[in-house]
Length: 270
Image (cartoon, rainbow, N blue to C red; front, side, top):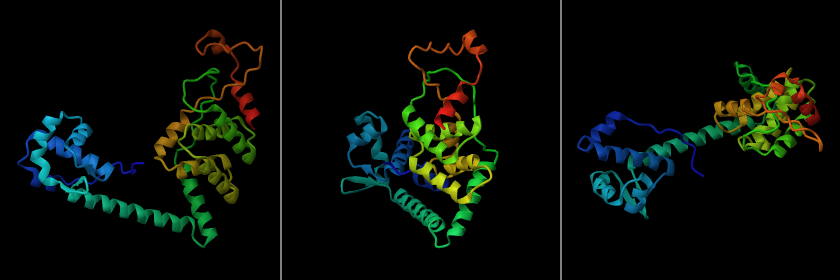
């Protein structure tokens, strides 16, 4: 699994001072290799592999690489750039410090302080104009979303059993909690931890608080959590043998049909 480092520090003055004699093509190849170096932490010491990595013709790559070979060191079958190795080590050290601070915050001896911090963080996540956006319009029994509906329903029932939703909006929150697990963006452990936090803090609105905890602990960018959450399809009603198929979402029958099927289905989940 590749390390999650979406960007690396770049100093234009230092770079231009060291590369002022390079051709334009060599500049492009060098910078491309530095990006692969950052992601993979080292490069293969093989011209053919490097050419394949950068999408270049091997002969053209070999000719261009002569200009920038001075910026790389070879050891144990790999190429490394001294400056990039230093930046990678700094990034790792920063990550470890952040992880240590998080562990101290969440696993410290003062349980009350830990719960207080959890409450503040989750409430902040939930209330910064980032309430869950819910679309309760029924759009038909089939969707094009790739997710395991069985898993989504199972997790939704589990969440509903813990929080006992009494409104359509809160039932849909349970469904969406199941959906983010079924898509693989959030783990079941995150959902369970969020439910434990709700039980410990006992917030005024447990469903909003649950959403805030999921956003905080998902392990992926907050915007990604929001996008997946808000793009969840409405759970289709279970069809019984002999039922007529639902009308097309764009048909007149669908446009004029009562919009309460979602509520009925989510009520079954709870």
